[in-house]
Length: 275
Ligand SMILES: [Mn+2]
Image (cartoon, rainbow, N blue to C red; front, side, top):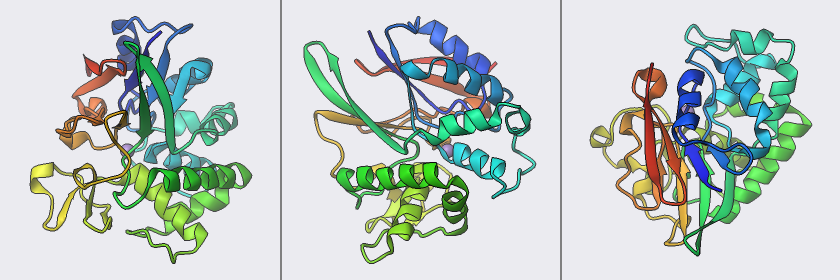
């Protein structure tokens, strides 16, 4: 049995299947971890979701900004943009089934895995975690998020996309905390010492604006020698964080680069070039 984590697929279904083949993914015994942004921009979002639904018992998924965007469009809270490639997924008869499948997925997931008679905790998010949020706070807010989105997806999605708070404060209302948390975990790349996020910046680490840095370069309370964090979202850094316990997996397949699949037991990476 092995655990494999895969970076942002964004509808690159062919490369995704080649990645599973490359590692001899065993559907009966292995687990697949998906860091979100499964869909959109690429050609085959519907095929990808269909397949993931089929193997859902062996898949651990966290939601990315593109899943939230898809759900918002489906529920009439946002409009498709010119660069979206979600129309097949929205118009299929089974769109509701796939939406409900996505709504079941968290924003943060963790599990302990065993390897070489040792164990380590793997934490997975789509974009990252602001340094001033503790893991316990994240799991509490995730619980609130899951309750809110299952109860009334339209309502919470509307709030997530209409309010973009850039920093967390304990004096915020609980709904505002939830909105900040959802945007942060699915969209953060850079922030300042106080955890204030610049949501616009998408470039390289070397050109980050003054007083800001990559979120994983600040001291945090969520990783240690027995736990590691995996994330996607930031294609421009090509998966490189220079950190031992914080590992990026988005290597820009949809932009013509590569799809990365990593075995979590030994962090060995395998890559498939964009076809
Ligand atoms: Mn993303």
